[in-house]
Amino acid sequence: MRRYGKNPDEDDIRIRPNRKGNRPRTHTRPKHEDAVEGFVVTVDRGRITCLVDDRTVIAMKARELGRKSVVVGDQVAIVGDLTGDKDTLARIVRVEPRRSVLRRTADDDDPFERVVVANADQLAIVTALADPEPRPRMIDRCLVAAYDAGLTPLLVLTKADLAPADTLLNAYRPLGVPYIVTSREELVNGAATELVRKHLEDKVTAFVGHSGVGKTTLVNTLVPKDLWRTTGVVNAVTGRGRHTTTSALALPLTGVPGWVIDTPGVRSFGLNHVDPSRVILAFPDLEPGTEGCPRGCSHDEAECALDQWAADGHADPARLDSLRRLLATRERREGD
Image (cartoon, rainbow, N blue to C red; front, side, top):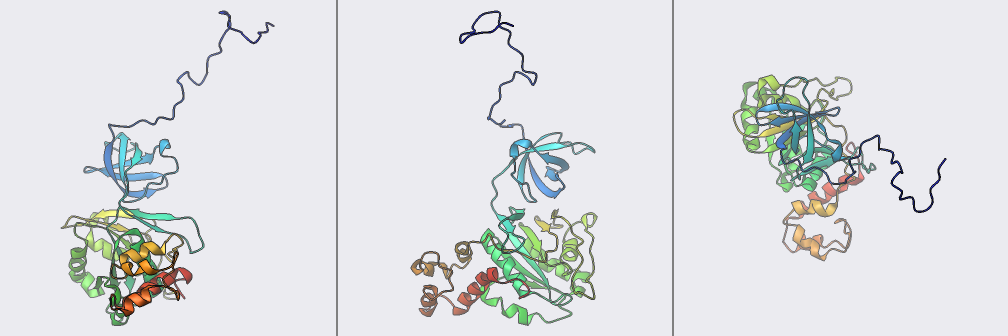
């Protein structure tokens, strides 16, 4: 066998070809100038349903996106077969920058953030006044998540024919959160639909709430009938609803421009990801008073400057109490 020394530059040396191809590797990703814009409607086991113009296109995430998630509400760039025909599959090659992200964790000790929806403008927190009983701690947690994400909260109280709303509303009036109170009769005759629709026009609104509060029933009255989702009933023994919505789904409003995003019923809304300094930004009357706070202030300690700020008349003390109640939700669970 012929052996070569340190300088084997002879012309008769054979170079074994690369069986995987001779194209050099590169870290430069394609730009996909021909990609078209799509709106993510739902995500189900790796298959992503997008709206492209007036067509529904099924797509999958391109490998080049790596671990970057694609969620309902995302604006994405798509290539491939965009006809929307049966058994066709396109590719999502880019996720456009998100203007808002609603997140939650499984619990307050879980470091893993879950993105619920992207690019929403408003968070509708749906709560029944009875059957099942309202859970104020859950409402508080959703409010904190909304403020943290920069979303406008909307409190929607259902089943007002079973219990009065005044007691619950009194706890949230200092926050100035807009609210809607509906009854079963108003859902049947359409009065509730018209009332809610006025708050949703020209917005992307995510609906959240416990199972059984009437969230999906309300959503069904707002969207085309052929897009209605299955609804369930409340368990008479446990007082809890049964999960009928298993994945988030964006649906267009009827009659006015706008979208609603129906999300699965949740039994917990962890806030491990929330930074108190972002929540305070939702309180413009209190935020300037934090300039005198010590670094890393939790806004619920002896050195907090907000007490003097409210005492000097710059803000309503009730607003400060509400802020501290919301921030304290990270230290206690919904049922406490």
